[in-house]
Length: 296
Image (tube, rainbow, N blue to C red):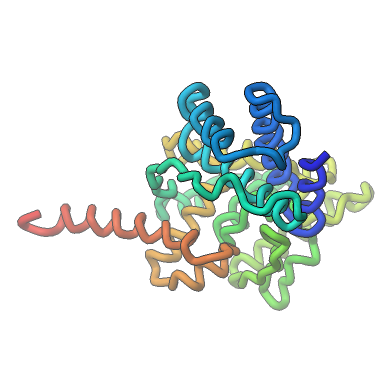
């Protein structure tokens, strides 16, 4: 099946993550089902512009999906069409004339610096393996700005404490090095010693962070741990590892870090993905201006 050939291409050549390839497969199968049911078309190489346009209207008007979600699905279909062109199955993409629905730019949610510092400095996480590991998760996310998937996939030898660097394999299998502070390296060393003592006789996995059974962490567990601790410092609806990543970038920018440096630390492919954080800084400036200027 053509879709499965495309998915294998994403996995093996583009090195996309399992989460991303699952999203592509779902989007493309939904589109294939739509054109099959409405137009009796079984081959995606026979799809035309009007069919794509009808699918777009179906998603927006009948399914009431957000513009952001629809754009993600269109992106999946665009990538698939480029794959068909390279494979010689079609000459031009039926999406060339499609205009993506406009989305409202959302500012990244972040937590104030004082609150996150207070959480890490004043919270009693406990001194057993689970408590120290939980603190390590929050510390690692905030200290480095890495993604949840990158955190889960860290190996022990990715954390070089003598050199105070962290090796991260991010999206597209791109590798980057993140510097570590002495304070963080010291805590990571304490965590690793406790980890070795706790799993001395159980043959634990080689990942840096483990469940209490010595197994690789999983996304739901990381989300749950982060939410439990963020619940104590913020009433924001979103309490996720990505919020801590946003906080890392915003706080770095507020303290004078350049956009290019933040781009490299976050592992963004291009600068436009990083520039969104400047909006948060500008919002902070506007607030200070209104509070401080005598005629504001």
